[in-house]
Image (tube, rainbow, N blue to C red; front, side, top):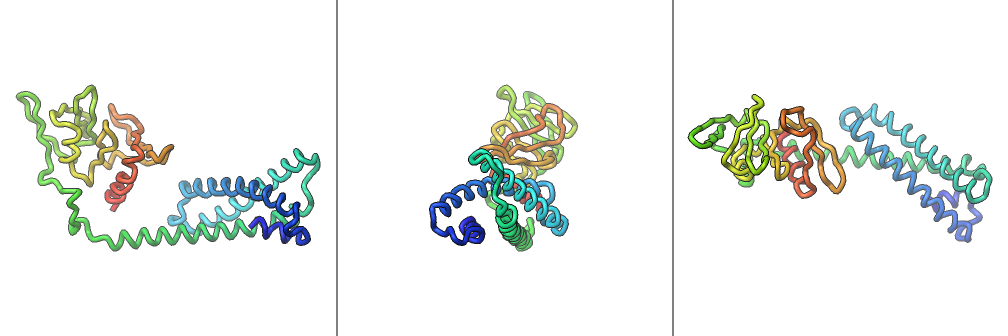
Length: 261
C-alpha cells in the first residue's frame, strides 16, 4: 500500500534512495495508525456489535475510524517533519497522501465488516444446526439422575436443591455450599466431587476455589495472558470478580455457549 502511495505522489522517484527511505518511514507511521484503528474497532465491537445494529454501527465506524486515523497520521507526519527538518510537511501530504490513505482505510473497513458478518453468519448457522439439548448424546457431560444434594455433617443431614445453590467454594480447607437463601453450609465432599455431581449445564468450575451457577454471571472480560475476568452479581462472601485461568478459558467459553443455547 505504501509503495503504491509513494508512486502515486512521487512517480519519478521509483526505486531511488528517496523511494526506499520514504517507504520505510511511511510503513512505520502507517503501522502505528493501523494499530490505533484496530484498537478503535475492537472497542466499537464491545459497545456497538455489528450483528445487533448493522446500519448504525457502520454509520458510526466509517467516519470515526477514517477521520481519527487520518488525523493521527497527519499529526505523526508533522511531528516527524518538524523534528527532522524543522519545517512543516510537504503540501502533497495533504493534497495526495492523506486522501490515498483514506481510500485504503475505507477498503480496510469493508474487509473487516465483511469478515465479521461472515463469521457471525457461520456462528448462527452452526447453532441452528445443533440438535436439541434433549437429543444430544454427551458422555463428557452426564446429566444427574437426581436434583438434590444430600449433605451429611456429623449426625445431621440436610437436603439441598440444585437450583438453590449459588456457588461452592473452599475456605480454610473446608468445602462450603452457599445457597440463594444466603446460607453457607459445610459439606464433607471435596470441590472435585461436587464438580462431578452438580449439573454441568448449570455450574462451572471456575478455578480451584469456586464452582459457580450460571445465573450469577453478569459479564465477562478478557484480561492479560488469555485469562477471563468474570463479573458476578453481588453475593454475600463472594468476590465481585472471579478469574478464570488461560487453560480453563476455552472450556468456559464453550460452557457459556451451551448455557446460552
